[in-house]
Image (cartoon, rainbow, N blue to C red):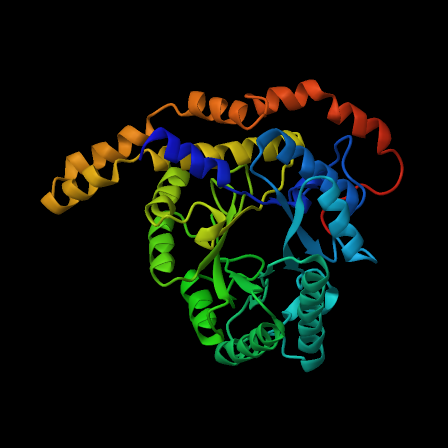
Length: 387
């Protein structure tokens, strides 16, 4: 692919940032406060707009309900538009209420299941008000002990709840179903892997798609195979990009294994699905505990962009020829040559051509934004986990 074609694709790439990444977060042991943290959804939007202002490819922000609940969602959407971005994926939260101790949509208690489903339907109402295209579902549902509940019955309950939410979607709205190997359920998780999510999506219909969170797999899992399979089945709806050393660490994308991020983007680039018309929503799902929030989000966006640029450099014609010939080393060399290429000068030039500063993090630091919001955001309750 020639450089002009590559930069045209990169110019149209979009990476959604999560509202919760801008709030205070921490580990199981401590939530670490930082200055200038937003106190409400409007201030989160202002931070997300700042990331877009310096990267040029982060034009939307995901909301988490009820963390980002407001009285007027149309007003919130208009506020986002005034700041040059839009409201993106609506994330449902059915894992923090005391009622959900034994699960939400798979809970043995019909009243709890009904409460959970009503929340999912509420999130679709919010989509209608904001124009958000996607409903993202992650369930903490599962069991800790053998015999605690009937595993097949829990799948029936899950399928019923998903069907009710899916039936409520209108137009081009989609349901994105996320999976996670474990945590907080340790014996059996109700949606533990891509196969379970895929099976439920196939049962629901074409607007039910699978979300791949890059931190939600067993060690050694070949995530790019999952990407390739779901692409082939037209069921890959979205990514939650982050990075992990051990489990669901939610570190900056590309921090632990940038080569894995490149391998993932290789499959997406090969399928021609980098830009929004490819049908994949690229999102970050990260909690920045010790690093500055906005800078960490910018770094993650740039890391995904860099991995994409390298994937687009791969000589697909030469690679296909080497694969047909069974030339193992030549095929691997073609992949590795692209990975080892320094694409940073190309990306700096791209940003200049887009009217942006070539070094986004340096430009952000020089902007004085953090000092400004730190002085303004005094009093009130800083956003964080559960807020």
